[in-house]
Length: 319
Image 1 (tube, one colour):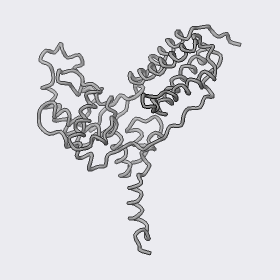
Image 2 (image 1 turned 120 degrees about the vertical axis):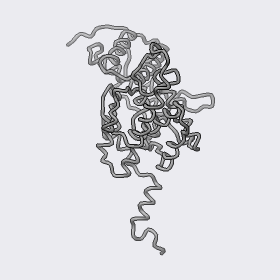
Image 3 (image 1 turned 45 degrees about the horizontal axis):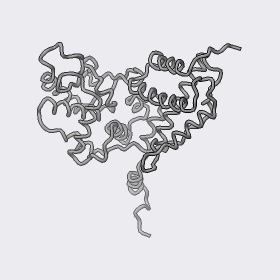
C-alpha cells in the first residue's frame, strides 16, 4: 500500500491552490470563487477544531453542507441559494479529489455526499424589439458614446461574455473577415463571427473614438493593445462594462430585465429561434458541453401558445 504523506490542512489547501492556478489554469474570477469557498470551508473546520485533512470524514462534509443551508440573514431568509451551496461543494470536492490523486490522502470524504438540487430556470433573454431598443440607447458621437455603442453591439452580435469583451486586444480583431478571436474560460481560444452592424460600430469606434481615449503620454498606457479603453486610456474593467450595459437598459425601461449575461442569453436564444444548429451555438458561446447550450432550446409558455395556435387546425375553432 502506498504511504500517504502527512500534511496539515493549511499545507494541502495551499498546494491545491497552486494546482488550480498552474495546472488547471483557472480564470481569475473562477480562481477567486474557489478561494472564497474553500476559505469558508476552512473556517468551518477550524470552528470544529479540525486542523488535519486526514481527520475529515464524510459526516464532516455533510455537516458543512447542512451548515451552509442553515445560514440566514436578519429576516430569517436563507443566506445562500442552492446554486451557491452546490458551487461550494464543487470546491470542496475539488480539494479532496486533488489530495487523493496526489497521494496526500487515502480517501475522499466528499465522494458520496449529495449536492443540493438546484432549480434550473430559463435564462432571461430579451426579445428582439427589446434588444433593438437597448442597442439604440446610446446616442451621441463622443469617444465614450462611440465606445459604449460598440460594446453593446459586439456583446449581442457575438454572444461573448463581458469578461471576454474587455479582454479583447487589437490583434484579436479580424474585421475584414468579420471574426474576432476570443480567449474564454480555461484560456481556451475560439474564433467568433461578428455581424455587419457590430463591425460598423466597432470600426467607427476604432477610427474616431479610441484614438481620443488614448492618454497623451504613451508611458501611462499600461496595455496599449486593449480594444476598449476607459477615460484614462487604460483597459476598461469588467465592472465598468457591466455599468454601461445597466445604464443603457435603464434609459429604455429595461432595468428590471437586465443581467450581466443578458445580451449573451439573447444572442443564443434568438439564433436558435431562427434555426441555428445547437452545435454551432455551442461553439459560438464556448460551452464545453452541449448540455449547457440546451437550456436555450426550451420554449417559453408564450411562444409555445403562439406556435400551437398558429399550427393546430382546431386551436381557434369554436366548439
